[in-house]
Image (cartoon, rainbow, N blue to C red):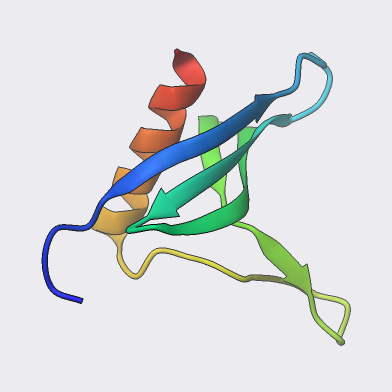
Length: 86
């Protein structure tokens, strides 16, 4: 899978409820594969992108999708937040 990686926001659903920390759900496409369930959340230091999660048998929540390194996380975060700000 060599070559350029194409990432785009394919769907963004905003929530106008001012009381909730959850601001939007985001679905992204990476080279034709769609990842659903990313969330834009209001944190103590501003908005951030939270990864989709699954509840394990032990009752804890685990990320089902996540970036491999800090640079990939930063690029994905910037893409999603830019789409949210439009």
